[in-house]
Image (cartoon, rainbow, N blue to C red; front, side, top):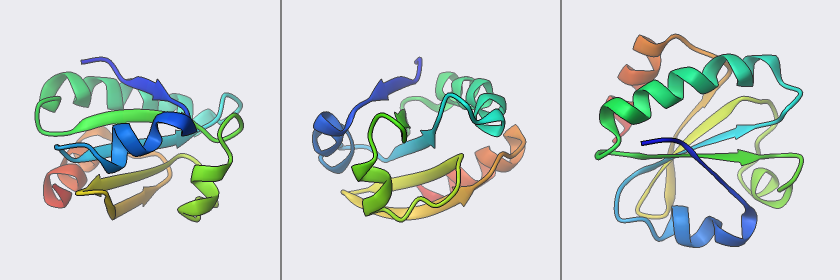
Length: 106
């Protein structure tokens, strides 16, 4: 599964109304750590894509959602279950750390 980039107009449908947990990667084009974590999230999506949906939201193009969820720094990863944020991770991380965080959060 490849990671889909979403915009604010589909956030409710893609995230809040999702039947499976959703991990949102809040990122920006100019963010170095965001570029580091992106291929790791892609690998994770390919490995455990049936358990969780991984999406990207560009904070420069979509400022309202990051403000709503108090995203102060990027990359910020937030896992949503049943329409509610249940776990947040700020900054880059290695794959094993991300997998462990996801598994314990979903």
